[in-house]
Each structure stands twice: as C-alpha cells, then as structure tokens.
Length: 414
Image 1 (cartoon, one colour):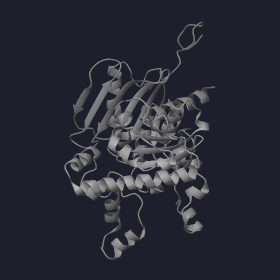
Image 2 (tube, helix red, strand yellow):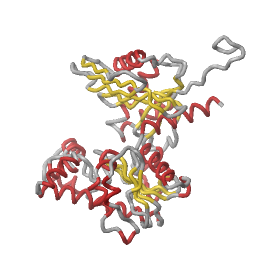
Image 3 (cartoon, rainbow, N blue to C red):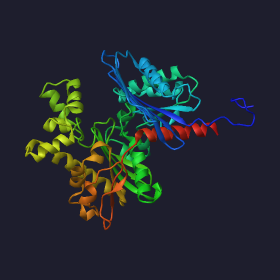
Image 4 (tube, helix red, strand yellow):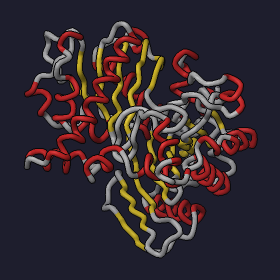
C-alpha cells in the first residue's frame, strides 16, 4: 500500500520547486511546477528588519497580487510570512507536491562545480567562503538555515553563481601574481551571473536549432550588474567578473576594469580609507559615477536632449563592451552567436546597436527593424546574411535554479 492508502495507485510525483534568493534585507521567491516549468507564484520581501517591511505576493494560478507593509523582524519571520501567502493560494510549503527548495548562493569557490543537496559540510564551506563574498554569502546562509528549520524533512539545494565558470582553464582563471599568495588567500577569477550565462547560452543554441555542444556563444548579461562570458560548446572558457563582481564591464554603480594602482593612489594621495575606496568603486562608480544616473533609459533620454556627460558615459560603456566582444571572439576562435540578456541587454536597442556597430569585419551586424522590436521571446536581430547571429535572449535565472534543483533531486531519488 502506498502513502496515499491505495495499493494500486502510486503517490503523485512531487514536482514543485520553491526558489529562494536571500539578500541581506530581502527575500525573492518563486514557486514553479517543473512538469511544464510554469510559475505558480512569485514574490518579494524587502526591508527586512525595518518598520516599513514590504511583502508583495503574486499568485499566477488566479487571483490578485497582495501587498502588506508591516514590520518583519528577520528572515525567519519573512519566510513564515511567505509560507502563509502561499498557503492562501493552496500552495503551502507543507504540500506533498513540493519536491525541494532551491537556493541561490553567490559564491561557491572552486569546491562547488554543480548544484548540491545542502548538509552541514556544505554549510560550513559556504561559511568558509564569506571572506571572498562578504556581502552575499552571509545572507544566502541565513536564508538556507531558515528554510531548513521550516522544512527539515525537505531537500534543500544550493545552486551557485560561480559554478558555471569553474570550467575556465587556469590560463583564464589565474591572476598573474605570486602563486603562493594567490593560493593562500584563494585569489583567482571565479565569475558570477553563472545561472544566467548557463541558461542564455543553452537557449541561444536552441534558437539556432543546434545542440549546446556545437555552438560557441558570447553572452552579454547587461543589467545594473553586467558581465560577459565566452562559452565554447556549452562550457565557459572565460568571463569578465573576477574574484568579486567588480571586475569587467562598466556597470550601473561599479567601475569594472581599472588599474589597481588607482587604489594605492587614492590611499596615499587622496587619504581615503579601504572602506571609502570600496564604496567608491562598488557603489559610486560606473554609469552613476560618470553621469549621475545608472538607469539606461534616463541616460538615453539625456543624450537625446544633448547632454554631453550622459553621452560620454554611454560611449565609455559601449567602448568596454566592444573590447570584450573582440577579446572573447579571439578566445573562442569561432563565434556562432552573440546573445544580449538581462534588463539593459533585453530592452535597450541603442546599446545593442552601438555595441555591434563597426564590427562588420567580424561577421557581425544588426538589422535596425528587428532590433527595434520589443518582446519577451528569444529572437534574432541580425540580418539573414550575417555570418554571426546576434540574438536577444531573455534570461531566467529562477527557472535555471529550479531546473538544476529538480534534476538533482530526481537523480537522488533514482
């Protein structure tokens, strides 16, 4: 006899995955049914620990969005509030259809190359990596521990931003500094946005009607945080972010690539402390440092009105993009497609056009009419005659986390 009391009927397959992305003062969540990858509910808890904490919950099985503004003391209270919201829609965390909870973890170092079911050893390793991810891993750990306390019987799976990039060869991952020092302090290029790069590179291959192992793709994840990757046959061989998410492209508030000696200059000549420089480079640089805005829509509006500071910021942003496109073209040797994704990549047609302009010698071109089309579907924006496809591929990091989590839980049940 099965668990449902009928000896002739098998128990229903648990097919739901709850995806949690825990920040220092927020929790983003989505509940998905992996039988057809549909979303059942999405939501956000923000300003945790404040009097004006906000929870917005949207059921996608029918019904209106609900919002509450009231004090939410900590992540434990936040997840309990999320559970209550889901229960109102018949999607409670006690449902036998819930197969696992998938957690986004920003930094997995070199130890975690795949998603993993969380146990004490995994928790200890994530904690050990806090020095290289001080803003992210502590919050990720808090969310995991809270979820484990709520459902200790349920598999909890960690999916790491860095995992997709662990296939980089040492020639790409190593910095040219003293090896002993680098190894002692775990200094190397780890890369981030890995779930997005994995998803988008695979979806780009699908758009081209090919298998991922047959396609070389340059992925440009352009949001407030931005990163590029060179993906060869489904495996990352280089990426723009490094030890931290500060390296690489010009971003909304981060500087990206910069001469390290600037830091010494600011300390010696500018009298700035380590914390002040950290804040400068991570929160007061990039587009916001160059022109006072980190919203690409506002920057384009200012450019249209003749604002030269906004124009310069845009030009610097595009110049860095072109450098990475050219560099990763050289790394890959053969490029089948360039894929734009994330908020700016998916929605800012002028960015895509400017980034590809002048690269016709590399087989790259953008069709203006196709580029101007807005939509939620993956699409090509290059002319049919172009040697290299240029695509817009909406990212779906939550679906990628849910897919990896479900695949792992399914394997463990085999």
